[in-house]
Image 1: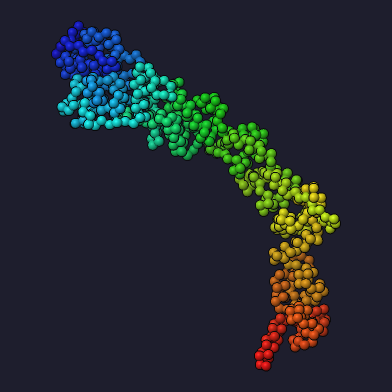
Image 2 (image 1 turned 90 degrees about the horizontal axis):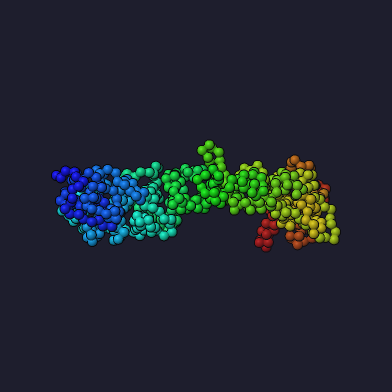
Length: 607
């Protein structure tokens, strides 16, 4: 063993190749001079400077070397901002095709993030193609594994995709201070290493909880995974980056905080990668928020650019109300009723924060101006508020905001619908006795649902308002034909199963009032007593009477005979009439007449 001596002259003095790995150059020196390991070379020279002097290396030749020297000579010095932790110190990587061309170790291969040969576009090797053993950097033979296999064997050479190649070439270009990735800011080699080390940990399927120092970076698979992911994210920029943000966005149930939603990535972008050269990442992150973050971005987000805060389209309900010139409660009611699309998040304190898109402000102002409250609608229609509520319940008025929709404290009814309940009169030469809708509501004691039916009859022109055709009048003030309206109401009540007076029954049966009163008195037409004055007749009672009895006049008409002659020839006795009980008309039981008719048919058959 040669004693450590800086003045020792090596018999063979190889020359460095441009960008050759320092460790690789030392391997060639050691092997050329008969050393079996780099440690033996280190025992000969006290330091790296002594070796360089013994080799007679010029300053230019020393600058051609890349990477650290062995650690047994102490810490290496780097002039390009790199540190010893950026390099592999124990495990060798190589391109078999490059070794075939020139048997020396390329400097970029020593970088922990290096995983691709940019010349041959294949994945670097780190294990023997025959025995699978990792090749350690303390060796001096670059040609063969300890098992005898040739390291330039290309049997397991794997090609790589374009995004990974683009990033790998950018990293290698950064060694010379160049930028090879179009559309992105120039970054130094240490910045590229930092970008890959942090951003490469994030993918759609995995996001680290504490991104930072990565274990096993000296292993090729780890470096390949990081480089591959960064290549994907930077490829088709910024679509793939936005896709990652979308995945993280959807994975979080609560959207009350941007920091909590994007968690470690937020810290990576604004703390770990806070350098100016990484601003393009933050710019795209903030552009994503402008389009997809449904919460509020305000001055509390101090890390964001001022223009991001100013341009974010989401505003709080209070801000929206101020900008639209309406009350905050109006905006809140629009959101509750889902008239305006809004978003609600619950803060950790339990307080709820609602926001809307700024594009809705114009719509809010238009809606608020075009709506009337319940009180305003009642005043415009000349109706009590409870009658307006009936119109809402019946669907005649459809408020944008109401107690039924969103439990709002205020009713907001479109003024256009209110105007739809203003009516112009019908032109007539003679106006009959008229009555207003307001008077009907106050004095006619309408039953449940009858006001709704009355308004529908007016809307369907069953009842026509009276007055000037050029002056629309609110619903409560319009005039209706009193007699026609009363008759309409009677008919509606009768159709609904309500009782009617004896006078109305006479009109329905086509009989004189005195005749019907006689029928009631004789018990032929049943009546009831209800909450209305006088005797009342039901539909069932009228049906029963018409089924059981028939007047002489009606029967004579069906038989096409004179009533007097028929009365004299019939063998059936009337149940009521002038000669029976003093009634004004004769009435027969229909069953008696049917029996008589059947007997006459039998007699005719016998003849």
